[in-house]
Length: 187
Image (cartoon, rainbow, N blue to C red; front, top):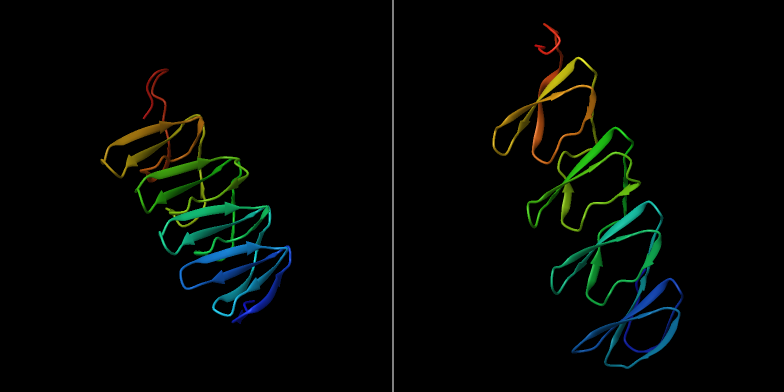
């Protein structure tokens, strides 16, 4: 909710803030508070953003364009020149899952694997795959071909292992069963 009045007394409860604008500056007063606003100033009441334990929000400074992430549980009071995106749910990974984030500002890829609790993308990150991925479970006589999409090289991942893909890796086909020729050689 937002109210705009030209002057007078304004109050903000503990989960609200007042945004007071003058000709030269903007200033916020976090509640609880009571403020007198001069006739030459304007005042807007803003609700604090209440984040649960599993939520986060991206905040953008409209002057600098810089972004930051606030994670719950907490109550977020915006600065004078901040705007927020809508609240988002954190990502939870079980022991066999992973997620890859790409930073739109730097191009760097971050991989989070296995049981992590809350996983939250950074301010400039997006989910590279668009979803949570599941690691490939390779049994003793199985293998998988993995290609590095950046340089085209391939490697063979041999079982027994839980295969998590790294930043630039993709599976080539599906996992295969190796046929043992002798004690040291398998195809």
